[in-house]
Length: 235
Image (cartoon, one colour):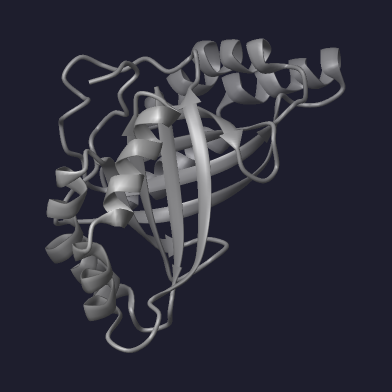
């Protein structure tokens, strides 16, 4: 599986216009050309705002190139783009990431097509160089279970295969509401098992397996809530 994440920096005051484009105009075009969107979000807080993020699922790069090639060659797309831009460019910047499922991530039965709201977090986090197997083991044995114990639902944990700051992982996490997100985030940061694991990593490796991170606190698009899980096998 291949995931494509696009982060659009939107012109000031035009986030609602972008939502209208993504809600009312692009879905039929995307479906027509086989572009499967797993989730759409607007940033509530993060390093770049106002920002719109969405994630596509692909079997491989070949499927991705074929679908987007057909989409951009469709004469309807420039008409939609011009009409929704309404005289000025809406998207100011595009950050593009390619990702694959991390071995620690397991898709729960039924979650791949269940929709999920709440408060979401999309985090790009650096990992220790040359430690990918150890990172996956830590994620599966400690990080994901403790995150779920704090009240989070893990939509996806991915290895970043293209983009700035490699090596890195990308996590997409949902909290049922803002109060749970705030309380759960605090509990997760002070979790004893997590603190002990980090200390063990410092003692044996001289550093933690997970490094600095950029987090987007995201509002899932209400007109197309994200799926509760990224697919880990082709549809």
